[in-house]
Length: 487
Image (cartoon, rainbow, N blue to C red):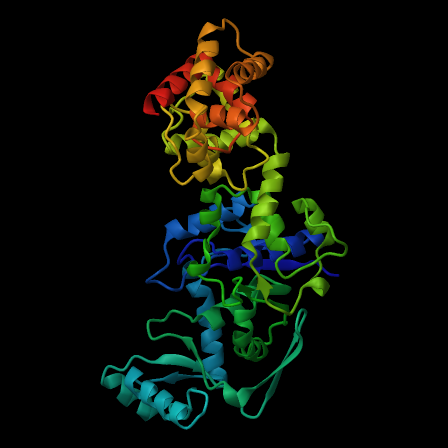
């Protein structure tokens, strides 16, 4: 295969959403698999909604996911500039070429006229499209339109009765009838090119060989084919990736949960897990394996195994996959990533000392295998923080165990034992609990659950022995005293 050149060209009108991230990832995997070039450029012709802040947020999200690019924004290259607004001067010669050849023309129709035309076609059961009212205006007609202040758009003259064929690398042969398209706008009245025109020029001038994008762009493809043909540009290969659906099989939206990469990052999903998960949305390598590094994904990736069917976003699977990566990560790394969430919850001070960091690592270690995403850390680890125990009122088991006749005696006996010790470690803690059980005459849940609830306010949580050791005798004694006073 000749050198592969792919591109990802987001519009900076919002953060990078999951569908866009998967499109970027498939392009990145395809380029890396073929040792090709990944280009990133910005389609900012939507002047009202595009911002540099969103542009940087999109690029930041890509970097966070581990995707690099070889040419484009922030990298440079021989085909710049890489923002459409900075490329307007490059488009004009092609507009003039199409006008001079008669393959495009100026249209002066008002929005009211176009709306009336659309309503009429809809009422007749036809697809709304432009019927070519300005196709054959004379020079005098155009001058008269301009004289009354009409600002024209430029429309592409769609050939009649023509079959347009896309040889799609995912969907196979896809056919379109030109008569159902209508003459479409390629330059708006303000001189800004439309998406379908600018994207073709950018792809052609940047020598893009393969266009991997979402299925929603398939309907744009016949218009783009016509522009490629009219300007004698070499056609790239197209591959349209299926939609991502929510678990109810409707199009992914905010009601299904987080939709942007930033939201998943902020909830504490690891980039490795999100990349692994997104890669398997609509693509499946051979075998049953589900955990892959980015390098493995690039080595295995092929469009032949990209599905035509929509991909369902399974949140349970993402959580499972993220939990796997958290469990396998070095404890030091996961602790560093958990601490901001603990700080936000007011559990950890702004600048922990080295000794506190060592303690925090041990705290995180107690729940590392249980964390599905890092934002859960405050809830899972809150038992380690604070002098006063707050009973979880939704925890019926905890309330039941405190209601036992033996519970005050267990708590009081354990408090006495704790206040007598001069040392504190796991073996001693186990021995103290065993002695309390013998002295009070209880065992099992009535013993261990009572101690747990007395020091944590919950009937579940980290290993009891680890909890007590890390709390230390002073704090354990304070909590037992406070709990005893509340009974």
